[in-house]
Length: 126
Image (cartoon, rainbow, N blue to C red; front, side, top):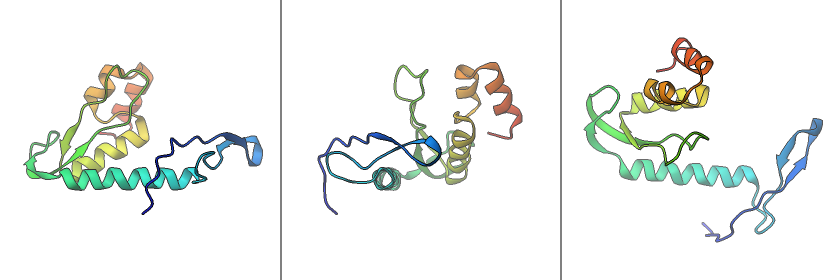
């Protein structure tokens, strides 16, 4: 694997249907998709390397737990908390974040608008 110290700048260009999409990096030429895939791969390596036996913070089962941290959102003043979740709860939290932007009910209760909270609660998310 080649290590790049490029700070990656992806200028926006007009694509099909006048939708903006990022071009290749101006510094090193990597595509935006390849850059995102590499970041995902690195995050997965960290998640697997830090997994340990413990108690899941969602279901309280004793199991192998994995690091979970949702992406920063506009309302975050600091980094979102790291939670240690079993594989089942990690998967549920990741799905909830992808569908709603919130990892759990407490996160939605503290940060969601009324409409977002209703969608979170009645949309089947954790």
